[in-house]
Length: 135
Image (cartoon, rainbow, N blue to C red; front, side, top):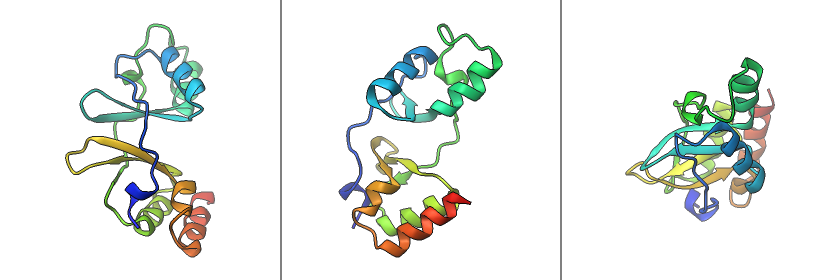
């Protein structure tokens, strides 16, 4: 089974110029802890933790500061045609719970979480990934 078979295809993307405040509201409204950032292609990720640790704890103005100032620009991702068990192993090794999904032109096509992968991967792969992430 491939990632495209279990991923969430509809993903809200924040423009790099979106303010921290707007991104936080979008996360609240979408009930997500991470937002991909980009315009034409995936440029970075901003998480609720980024907002707290990199912005609020450092007295960065959330109303005027764009997310591009605090996003992570080194983004782990997977391809939509990758095998879900391979992706589960990689997520465990990298200790991440969710990944953006891109096509081979690096265009964002979805998001996948370990719980999405659990719907199609064998139980041993998912269990191993969870164990590695919990470390």
